[in-house]
Length: 159
Image 1: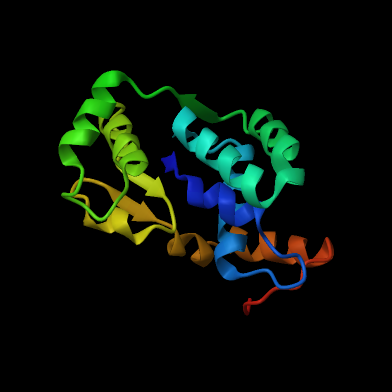
Image 2: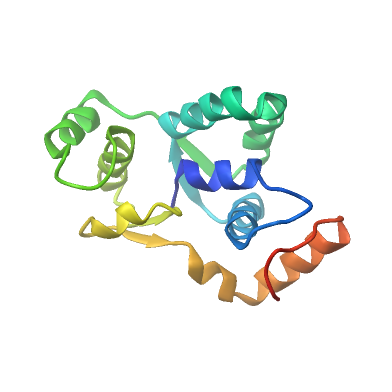
């Protein structure tokens, strides 16, 4: 599975006083990766998140970098020039920006067909399945949500 930048951003920007379902699912996905679920992302995703944090949540920069180290089963892949060339040829064919298209090229090179993302633009890409909402149906998500409550989070969704 590939982890998109939206997963990191949703979790890093979560509001503890009113935690949205999207933020909770994002946190749950990252928790699954921390617990050993094999996942991939790119240096491009990492840098996108760093840039977003530097603009909107500067105090979270160090926490994000430290948390990446805790995600031992997350492999961070460097896009190649060929990945970027393929993405540039597909630019404007899909409702996605160049960064997302580069990530799709990396996914195809690594034979990854699922992407965890809130970005519905990925739904338009043949051979790629966006997964997100279905995580909330897992029994472990309910346990994760209850753990968040015990940590002082106020859920903005029903269990």
